[in-house]
Image 1 (cartoon, helix red, strand yellow):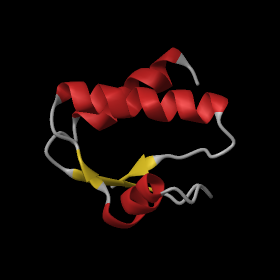
Image 2 (image 1 turned 180 degrees about the vertical axis):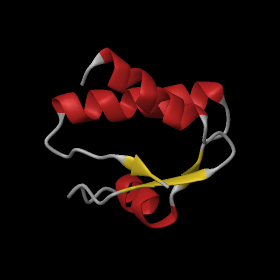
Image 3 (image 1 turned 60 degrees about the vertical axis):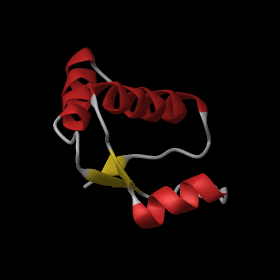
Image 4 (image 1 turned 45 degrees about the vertical axis):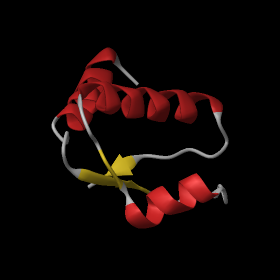
Length: 71
């Protein structure tokens, strides 16, 4: 991921504060992953948006269970 892509993706999360986002099924069967896949989550504030963005980036760099949030 380039720096520009990183910034654009971060802005995507910030633009969705107060909105519900979902993530695709990633093969993980834990209750948290299943709940967010089905019900989504509402990004509550700027800190939450940045946290979710960072979690997505770290997870996709380090885990076999990759995920991407979407509308």
